[in-house]
Image (cartoon, protein in one colour):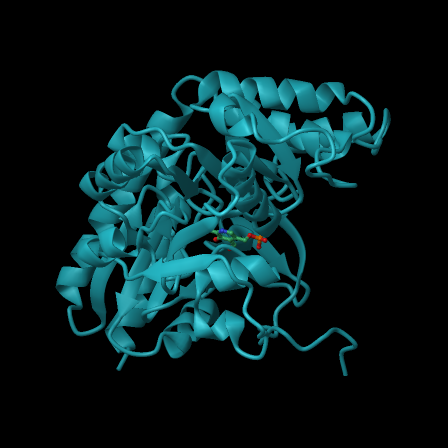
Length: 388
Ligand SMILES: Cc1ncc(COP(=O)(O)O)c(C=O)c1O
């Protein structure tokens, strides 16, 4: 019997090593991994450049307190701000922490402007921003909040696609709107570009902040560094994690100079966040993602993937109801509960992961090749053929 707290229905597979798109199980089987730690291993397993970077740093210094200047941190922050909307970065260890910082920064901004009562964050129902107390009540999905009351106050909610409700829920106490640019756990639901532009306009009109959670959809996964870039808008605050660490725990909250002005020494802190080891991996991930042509290739390969999945949907309309997502953040909605479908894929050596609304998520590394996509599509096809 396991001594690990029972919070996961773990599959009975474990792995001894990985390389690129593949995982090798302890019982000698080879799997095509389209989970990649849920959009974490952006460069696949055991990437040579990341291995070199972490090895090199591990021989110098692993950890120092944020009470000192950390050059690797300065470097990563510079690179992130030079390439994006942001002027400042706060490094954390996870997506939930990065999102908590986003919430804190928004509140603190209005506090510092003498509006401490303007502290509520308007979020989407059934979204996912993490598993801390604040982020579960921001997310407002029953699976995460059940049994964890009293509620953390300060969050209001509207339904996906309900523009009227959104406008109605903004009050004089609203500090920010916070949404995932693409809802990941919620079923790979893409907020259309015109809605993102609408959100930006509403926030400007109401003089409130726009927080876009890019923990799952950011860092190149959609073919642009941030998913919101497709809509040509600029948010005020963006939490990131997952892909930026390439498998090493690393989160960050990016923000503009305007909103950063509310924070000061002592208003936030972290022991581990931004340590030299994590920063060396983050910098190495960016070496690859910022390489000329890398994101263009993600766009190209994902176009091919979506095209193949659409063909599959047409061939098996009774099994696949919808193909969702953008870039390499892909979901296929199955006609019924997806548990059996995911198990059959796994039996055929393709690893995938569920999302809400009967969606099977397909999250290859950004380095995926056409032959890997073809292999995945062939397995999907085989399972569709016999599925009922
Ligand atoms: C959009 C989004 N935000 C936040 C989180 C929380 O990240 P973490 O699990 O690293 O705390 C996740 C994790 O899946 C996520 O998808």
